[in-house]
Structure formats: structure tokens, C-alpha cells
Image (cartoon, rainbow, N blue to C red; front, side, top):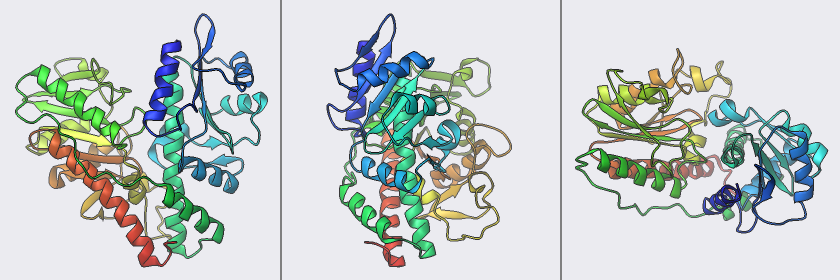
Length: 390
């Protein structure tokens, strides 16, 4: 258990979620262990005694996340309600506690997967493994980032940005890391056998995580070899895909699809419609933010955009489509494949980006990174056009 606590503490730092030496992660097996000693562990131990959990994650986020989250907590002192797909699916909303105390943390975590304590950080938990706490922590950070920039753009369109928001926004923009433009050197086609395919998928998955184009374990990846679609398993981490890729026959003659990504059907339909070999799906932040931007504040479908939007929207020519995770009448399995087949890429409202590659993951990755950088540039260009760029 100590090794798992150390592992996810290191992941949080590597992914830029927290500063080095900041995460405190506890795991309960035969006994309760922590990745490091800290006076606050005494309070967190009380949480273990009151909740049916086996792990806790606590840390102050790194900049600019800490600035964003503390500001949102002043706007929403009880509950923060992001509108991205990850929040709708996994978090629902994020409670805010005034103090770092066991009773307050326990009360919040009885209802939700993470809690924000302004000036202190985020506490999240796992019931099976510390990975769950890491995932909920990462998702909270992602959701608050998207909400902060989305609400600023919406206020800019309405002409209602107040001075406090402008000041914090200016500070956050200064804290943003520069966009990455260099490309990784991934395995090139041909990929002649299963071993080469699995190796290329694992390599591409690590690159997607390493470039910050997906958070926690979300996103997926696939490669088509004749009638077999190799796809990451549901709940797998893209930077740890070894042993977590399923070979699924498109004629459904095997049961491998039972553990495959929930978006297998969407991937398969793209392959039926277009002569491509691979698909990458990530959750790049500014792409998600721009997918949620709308210049029609009085639209009758507002609040249902993620499933019912019927506008032909694009971001720099990349189609933006609605669609819920998985299958069903409003599932992205219906809306996504035609868009990706026609354009080589699509952004799902509030969710993320899907891109294809004709031969290997080099083309797909370059397209994914380019869309995120274009989205970021477009965001700030729009603010400049609206006269609201600090």
C-alpha cells in the first residue's frame, strides 16, 4: 500500500497537479500508512474511522489551479457546479468547506467524491485503491479550470465581467504554462503484428498524458488491424496501457468488448466509415472550453447543449458535436463517427477531442495537439475581439 501511495503522489507532481512534496496520500490495508509524515495526517486519520474508504488524497493544487479554485470558492462558497461531461458523469458537483476539520471533510465526502477547502487544497478518497482518489482529485482540478475559463468567456459575451474576476483572470493567465508545439517521435507505420500495435498504443498513450492532453484515467485509444479493433480498456490509465488493451472483433464474435472502453462502438463506426487505422481521444482543456462557448445566450436548449444542440458549430473548422458517453439515443456513438470520418477530428461538447490517423499515431497525435493549441489561441483572440482581454 505504501508503494501505491508513493506512486500516485509522484503522478500528481509529474502531471503538474501539485508542487513537489505537497501530496499527502494515506492507504488502509492491514494498517494505515502515509506517503509522508505531516501534522495534518492526524485529522485525516479521523476521516478513515468514519467513512468506508481505504485511501485519502489531500494536496494544495499547483498554480494556476490553486488560484482558480480559491477564486471559485469565493463565488460559490457552498458548492461549485461545473458543467463539463466528467463532472456530469463522475463528480456531479464539488462541495466547499470553510475549515480543514474532520467533521466538515467527513460530512462532505459522505455525499461527494471530493471536497475543496479554500487556502488548503482538495481532499478526495478511494474505496478500493489510491488510484480512485487520484482520479477524483485530478477531475476536480480539470473541472474547475474549465469552469473558470468558460464562465469568464460567457461573462465577456454578456458584458458583465467584474473587476475581481478580471484581476484574478489576469493573474491566472500569467501562471499558465506556454503551449507545447514540439511533437513526440512515435512509432511509424507499418505496425506488422500485435506486439508492434500494442507497443505503439502504449507509447502514444504515454505521450497524450505527458503533454497534458488528458486528465486522470480518462480518454481512450484504438488501432484497427483488418477486422480487429485494439482498444484501451474501460477505466485504464493511458500512461499505463500494458496489459490493458482488448482485441475486439468488429463482428462481435468474441467477448473482449465487455471490458473495452465504453466508446468502442463509436470507434468501430469511424473505422467502418473511413479508411483510417487509429483513433486518439483526449480531454485537452481549451478544446473542451471552446466546445462549451456559445454566442446564443437565449437558446431554448441552453443547459441541454451537451446532448441536444442542433447547431452546426465548429472550432477553426473542427466540428463540435453533442453526445453523451456510451450508447443510447443521445450517445456520442451516433453523433461522433460521421464527423470524425468526414473531418478526421471532432470535439464533443464539454467532453473532449477525437482524432484519427491514416497510418499510425504520429498523424493523430499531431492533430490532437494542434486542435488544443488552436483552441487556446482562439479563446484569447475572442476575448480580444470582445474587448475583455486584461
